[in-house]
Image 1 (cartoon, rainbow, N blue to C red):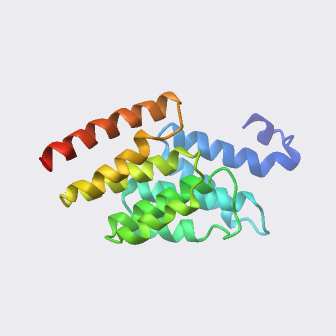
Image 2 (tube, rainbow, N blue to C red; image 1 turned 45 degrees about the horizontal axis):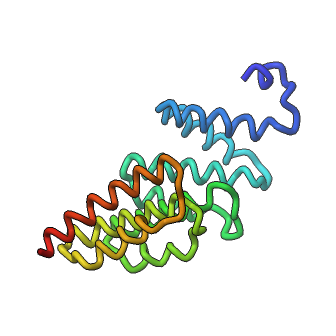
Length: 176
């Protein structure tokens, strides 16, 4: 912010604004983040950072439960965008599809998520929970097993694996 005030951020000015918007979002200052992203998108010219701004606006709408608004923002990302936010964007798209009742479309997003992405395993967990909610115990166990057998070993994935083991156990009990 200080570099922006002194006009010393130069070519990094756009990235600094997005960084500030992302930080605002991380600290729960959603309205401030939204203003920053919308201001960035209103600026003329093409920029790879526009995809990031559309992603963050989509994420904000998703958090508020505004699924149509979230999908519209995520759809504004360039189809060729394959940056660091692409896996999470595809998870959000899958989640939106699932919440709107299109489980088949949601499941198809697994092909767009890298095998080493935690978002793939969050998608599997969500799909497993969806099957369990319909009392499709075999289907839920199938998705939970994909997590259990995952090669990822971060603390976050270990926690998700524990939850998948528990959910799978309940599904087995429900299926008797």
